[in-house]
Image 1 (spheres, rainbow, N blue to C red):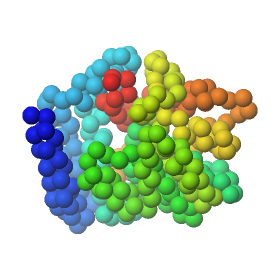
Image 2: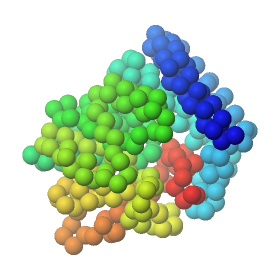
Image 3: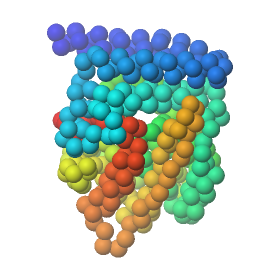
Image 4: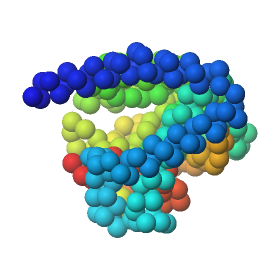
Length: 301
């Protein structure tokens, strides 16, 4: 029975990646902007409503996570979940519309963000950019690449269990001006070290639970939580600041880039530095709770 389920899942993924996505992407690419905005909002609202009705493991994790942390958001949990899903679906749709029609999205703070990156870019050293699963992290990669065109924008990723999905992710990011480095669980830092050059901007999505082995723990929403260690280790070893970057959706095809930095100090250890990073993430998530992925396996394993 399990083998049959896995086979059907693979067929469904193949069908989506090879047929549904290309057809949908083709339609989006020729759609007028005002049509897209109207259609995408209606579609996102409908799909978000469906997710609040149909049972799912993701919704169960969402409820368990907010109960475990005691974080209820600004509204009731059903509306909170619906708003989170609406924003996530809109982010996906708008990412592909921007991919098909470059320059369509308006980006607030882009001039200041470009200056921020340039001021913190050291000669003969890579730039370490960090984001979270907050807002539109895919477009954040595109905005980083366009803000520093003289540097190779290398985004780290883990391979999906389905090769078709991995291939789609890589193509999408490459088409938006990024390069992709798929890191393994055991030798991620070593793989990154090989790509530390003066002409690279290395991007991390660093709020996820580390897999395969335990990462450094930090208090995150009142709970001791595993984090990845790569960005912190590189920052401390090479005395490079961690540059935090987020693309927050503020309206249809309209984003605001928010940013900040964390610099290593003499005497910092991995535990304490990770706690500082976790504190930054928690502050931003508390500011924009519906924009974060509360249904990820952060605390419920």
